[in-house]
Amino acid sequence: MATTTTAPAPAAPKTSNSLTAGQLPKWLPWTLLGIALVLSCAVFAILAGGDAAAFNIVAAVLIAVVLFSIGLVVLSAVVESRRRAVDRLATVLVSIAFTIALLPLISLMYTVILNGIGRFDASFFSWTMRNVVGEGGGALHAIYGTLLITLLAAVISVPIGLLTSIYLVEYGRGRLAKAITFFVDVMTGIPSIVAGLFIVALFSMIIGPGKYMGLMGALSLTVLMIPVVVRSSEEMLRLVPNELREASYALGVPKWLTIAKVVLPTAIAGITTGIMLAISRVIGETAPLLLTAGFTTSLNLDLTNQPMMTLPVFVYTQFQNPGTNIDAALGRAWAGALTLILIVMVLNLVARFIAKKFAPKFGR
Image (cartoon, rainbow, N blue to C red; front, side, top):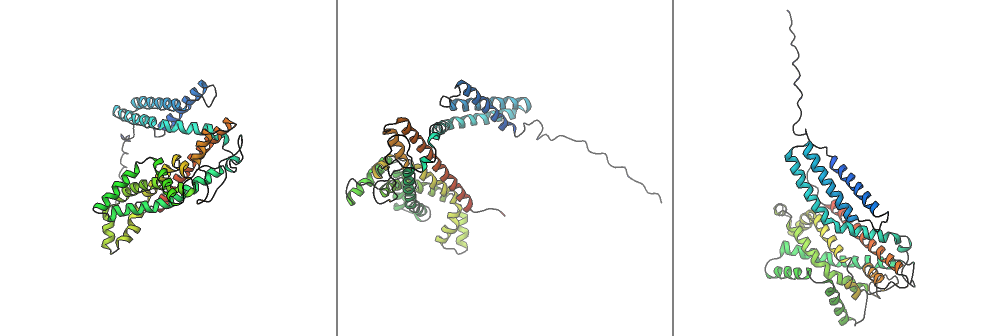
């Protein structure tokens, strides 16, 4: 019996995917932005004659973003469709607006790094200003004072603010909750020097006038931190879906345990961010610390006795009272400002790590 073989079916013609054809590569915008930044910075560096102080970082970044935007839109119009080019145009307009908003921060960082990097050495972090009137010296006493005072202020403020926000979200009803909300809103807008004056007046009645100590400085920062912690934590707790609470109650879990095991872990990322915003808001305050913690050139680790130096006051005094060598004092002041910025950056990185580590994991 003869067998018949069937010829293989002809291969289907290859068709191009219309969704990916005629599109710019994903790496092109970033490459184009890098080229624009290099060209713009090179031109402005030539115009500045190699002088870093005369280099206009704001103009260089702005021109680079404009060049990048024009190049990206032109390439999109040539390679891609008109609709895609219009979409690119809208994107780059938003990018330009974002860059303009960042220009003050870029200028600030560039100026602080340029002027402070010269004294950012080992002696700056290992010496105090005791018996120093000219060159040399450091900010060891101010760094310790800033860390101790801010830590004590956070230890006092965070539990009070977090518990207050839990009460307002989970328990607060009626006139008491409205009164707390009203006073928190009022405290959010008070000037920082008022907080310092309040602590000075309070301690003048308790221990007498003319006293300066780190504890007073921490309490003045606490007055400023509490309303920020309350408002930020309250908003984060309100974002937790009610379904999670109801599911916990349906399993017979009491309310306090639901808050501790369900609500707080769900909102921990936002709460941590709010706490870091509160710390960043107070760590650079100068006026209340001048009134409460005072000024000293020596290292003091006792929060309850004698004045204690902080970085904001250190920067202020170096600018205000430069001593016999103005350039050396200004270098110390800029280095202190750079140190303060780095401390805030490190605290924010630690907060992000904590929020990521302890945030609940969703999905399988």
